[in-house]
Image (tube, rainbow, N blue to C red; front, side):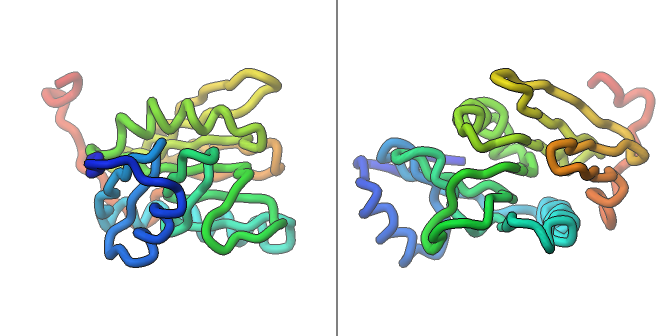
Length: 193
């Protein structure tokens, strides 16, 4: 992700520019950050998770949105997570607030920001219960789960693994998350390189 700002923008200017722009930008304290396009694999993974969560939350007071919806992290930060689940309340015409689940599918261009800056921003959201980071080149799911005032980290690496979301009394099977994705087998000589 590259910052393209030569000047600092107000939130109103950001919204006006986003309505006309052919590319998406995140907003961080007046800076516009151009969002890269995603790979077909990232889109497939995000789509798989979207379907799983939409089915699970169908008759519950939550809404699931994909990567084209802005999340207001706070008044000076608007992000485009790959998926966000929110409580079904309020007016969500330009952006959503109060996420309970955020999912980012990692890529070379976004991984550092997803792991560091965004993760720390997201952890400041009192409503958030889960932050998932999904790899697209290997069957790996990393999840941060809120536990009171702290966060617990879990790491899943096998397609037979199941990610537990106890707050919602549900699970995500890695085989379902990565359905349709083929992973290259690593030779023993490639491991650790």
